[in-house]
Image 1 (cartoon, rainbow, N blue to C red):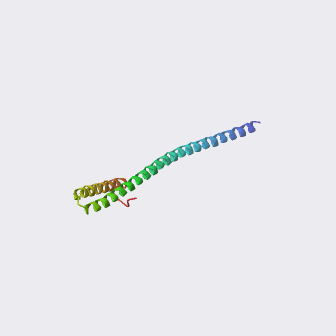
Image 2: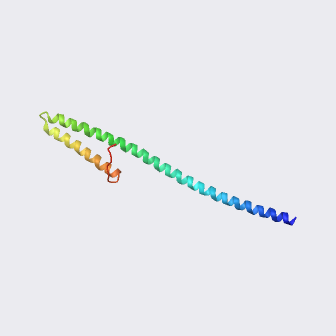
Image 3: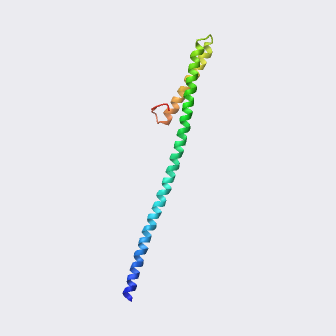
Length: 113
């Protein structure tokens, strides 16, 4: 009877150790899952911001191109002062766009998306 008790106590201790190890593994997995959720949330926000910025960049590029074309057409007419103003505005918009793109890409401009 005593040997049976010792065997059961040994099995109980082993089972407790196994449970402790599983609890530790579960805690590690919960922590890892939480970290992954944080990373997913951060990356989702970056993608959303990138889409918004790309759309804004495309809009600025379109407006600057239209203004440059308009400046060229107006310069053919008598109103050269207006053509200069429109041309400078288009150039300023392109420069601001270039600076914004450099700030996003850490100093290098690969393409104007």
